[in-house]
Amino acid sequence: MKKLIYAVALLIVASACNSKKEYTAYSWESDLHRRLLADFCLTRSQVKQYIQKYIPDVTDEQMDRWEESRALECMVIDGEKRYFRNAGPNLFRLDSICVDIKLKKDGPSSGGSEDVNYNHLPEVIAASRESGEALVAPKRMRITYTLTVDTNAVPAGKIVRCWLPYPRSDVKRQTEVKFLGASQSDYLFSPAECRHSTLYMEKRAEEGRPTVFSESFEYTSRAEWHNLKPEDVLPYDTTSALYKEYTAEREKHIIFSPRLRQLAARLTEGEANPLLQAQRIFRFVNDRFPWASAREYSTVENIPEYVLDNRHGDCGMVSLLFITLCRIQGIPAHFQSGFMMHPGAWNLHDWAEVYFEGIGWVPVDQSFGIPSFARNDEERWFFLGGIDAWRMVVNQDYGMPLVPAKLYPRSETVDFQRGEVEWEGGNLYFNQWDYDMEIEYLN
View 1 (cartoon, rainbow, N blue to C red):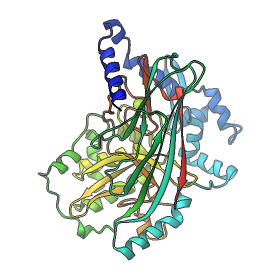
View 2: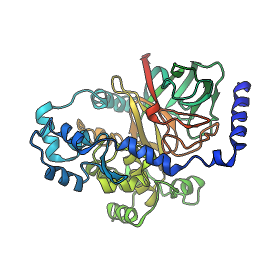
View 3: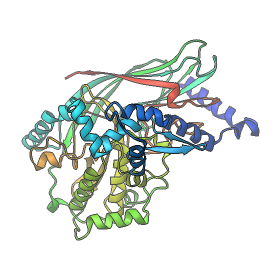
View 4: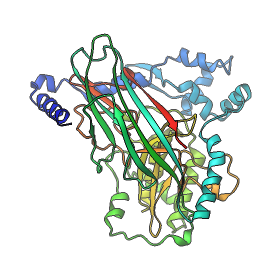
């Protein structure tokens, strides 16, 4: 451990002592340009070829209309129109006519978290009612997480620095976190107060071989459900530190623009109860902004505004929109993220928590929204005040510093899930490494 901390210190000192030319060689503008090229990597003909699988006689005029409606995402870069890497699949999630065409050809999709939660949610509600407890249905999981840097992505002999996601120990529904081992004998856990929970390691790159980092751990995750009632919500103490912090604007992504202020006021007009206000916001986002594959967050200047402009968003995007609208209305809210761990459907995932006076912090999964299978109001509103047991919480915030400090801007400047990697020559972007998770369900 001491050896690793010493190595980190030497690396930081060495970076600080670089010549001015070397230090100023990095440019965020150039980096952003490369990131945009990676996200917008398709030509019109490539996207058209995908669309023709479902609409063989698609015309350029149709594609123009989809671009105008933002259902087909593109951007002009270096004078050339380029299309988002998932522009084709997203079109058949966003345009209602295309959705129907795909459904008719492929049939309804099966599997996923909703299939798991179909039986899980009523079990959670029943267990909570019977026990009188909000935290129920514990799930014990054993995880091996691996990050693999591409062969020769870093010159042989150079030190590769890696931050891996690690489950938090300060979340009441996530307990009994047990570290089992790591690929390197020296490692460093982030302090408990760090908003991004990480396991840090270093390794020298070898010629002709990938650089592999891995960790193993166990933890227990519980579902949480609050049978929220408007009459149980008390007036906020607007002088408290909690209230001031979690109803404030942020420099990035939680910005109280005139457009968002007007939207929040319109959605909550005539309603003073914070729970009923939150329900209106939740319903609005659920009904108006379908899920679609998203650009890397680091390439988006203001995520809630992006969702409004493009009329879609992934889990983190709609969560940030929900959080911003809540904060504007004086409802404390914050970002929370990590992974959804549903059997057969694990993935990166983001959600939120809101604070109601008299109740406390409760989870809100805006992306899971109102389940299509909901059989009653309790299931319909489950994800506003509840969350399933299939989670791994890594982050209590977004865009916060990593420990130890990263020398170059992160690949993901907002969220932290897949991990981060760099060497003295710069950040290693997502197209230079891969990640994988093995999950063993122990109960």
